[in-house]
Image: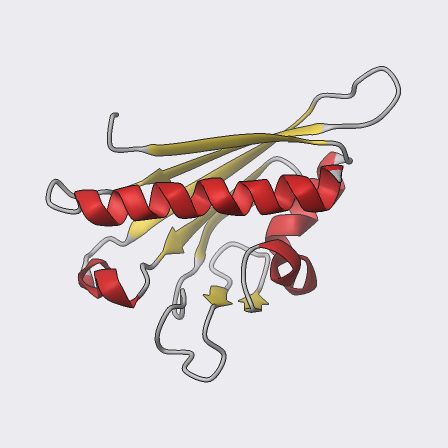
Length: 148
């Protein structure tokens, strides 16, 4: 359990909008990545690109959605950036699961998001620490975008 990356956020928006931030290409490109090719169905693509000139590197090229329940749950495979490319040859890849829960406050809708990034191997500690920091920074971007 200590190897699992856990990240959460409270967004001041509907659960539908929060879910769209993870499943719509244009929304993902606003806070997480430079390019996105996501097909929001089970077995669909979950490909994010941080280097548009070199899509084979620093991307999740080939990753798939493993489970999806609209406005409630999204799970997908994940690949590492170039410096941790050894992770991308592993079977299975690491895995990300995001849960969405409405937390309607008195005056405005809000959504709690919980992310778990699992599948870390014993000798991947540097990659895990890097990824934990990257998710933390990305969630700050997401919260700033939604919450202002």
